[in-house]
Amino acid sequence: MYQFQYNYTLEDMNALSRVTAKTYRRKRALVYRAVLALLGAAYLAIGWLLFSPGSKLVGVILLAAGVLFLALSLFYHQGTAWRIKRMMVEGEEEFTVTLGEESVYGKSVKGESSYPYSAVVGAFYYQERYFLFLDKRHAMLLPKRALIQGDASQLEAFLTEKLGKEIAKIR
Image 1 (cartoon, helix red, strand yellow):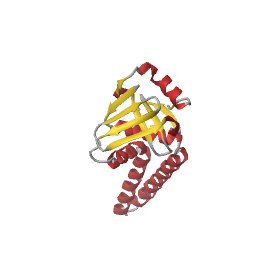
Image 2 (image 1 turned 120 degrees about the horizontal axis):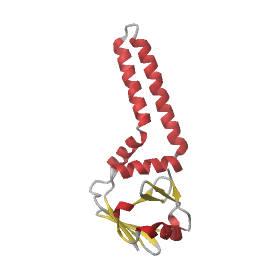
Image 3 (image 1 turned 60 degrees about the vertical axis):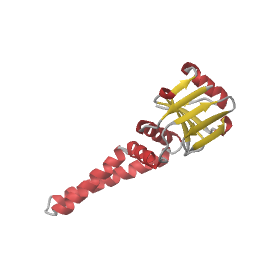
Image 4 (image 1 turned 30 degrees about the horizontal axis):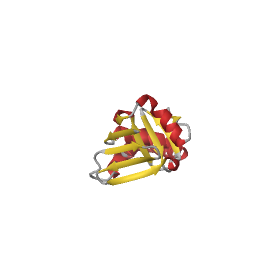
């Protein structure tokens, strides 16, 4: 049996955003970031053109919009992580996740949940964290730093056996 006890951090949410974007939402994330970058470049170009001849106020506004869109494109995962963290249920302080023989059990102040290993549709490892996806939008996070029971060196073999699938390593 393995047990994890942790509070979600902003870094955890950032890692979740990156794993989701590299696996289940690859096209969506790429298109979203590309559109933001194109808008940013367009606003910068138009702002620069208007700023030069004398429409300084409009030029400055468009330049600022261009910088904003480019920043949103460059810092996409950090923004997503911040939004995810803000949308979490208030009062969800500490999570305890137990990997049992038949199921994964989650427990917090707000309630408990249990998922059989067969419900896991995808398993990934990224930045010292395991992600067990229950569907394309929801995952159970297992940070190695939070392991309080069980042998960390045997965790991947345990998960591979219980899930009946390999754990993909994400770069």
